[in-house]
Image 1 (cartoon, rainbow, N blue to C red):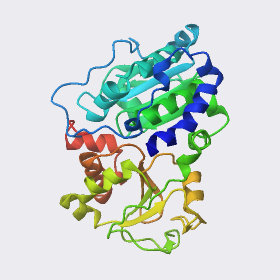
Image 2 (image 1 turned 120 degrees about the vertical axis):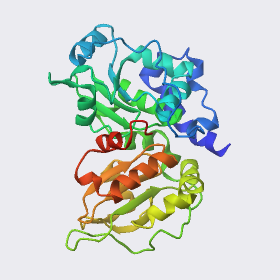
Image 3 (image 1 turned 45 degrees about the vertical axis):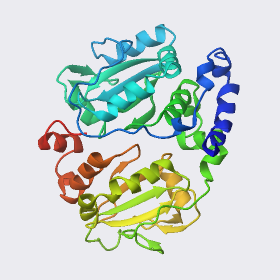
Length: 352
């Protein structure tokens, strides 16, 4: 019940917005059961069968500028480029759980055309700048480290939002409206979520305690003296189902814990005023740093090298195999030589 009450302020905002008011007949849009704020349960091992895309995805010659023109001509708000792969369980969750909900599919189809890109594909893509390249080169150019990734373009061809990985229906609905309603022109997605749902930033309950987290004070400066080990900063929050799942699942796995022991690890409440010295030497608070980084999903894991530079982040639903791949990529030093997707392909194409 408490989770349902947390959703009511955002629901009121959605229903009172001009765009949603025009869709008041879409009753299913307002029905947000408690579990929709939670990630669905699934194994993130590679699938045995290919992911099936919705029939309403646009058939395209992958000239994104032409696709956008056509979308605008049909009164869409913009274009969504979906980056996926054939045997990705996270992609399957997007197709079956999110797009499997009639209200989400209807809203997406009404306001966007969706173009599918295979991150390992060889078809030719013309991007918004007019450059021609293969699908896999385009995916690498756009730094789509995780699938599914969604790149939202507005009617002018400007990037409005980027989602890296899978998000439950609750956040996904908010992302759709954030772009379709033009909120991206005025505020960050983090600010939009916080404003729309005041309880979003002030959760009851404490963080998950783990022995591998370093205790305060959080003096993480690496700008003057390089550290010997990479750093992971876990941004979490209280009363966080996804955080609970991370700790009870992947972070309880013996093999992953052995790899994690090779990192420096810190846990921060992303809404707290806890003092922090960042890896670049900036004095701030956990909340201020999270805002500066644009974080909106808990848990978010950010990886830093020995010199304090951000290497990559995981800011979407993550399960055992994906997290293990990321840890191996960082601790092996492979990030210094090749992008994540190229490294993954060298490890075997069927990787989550």
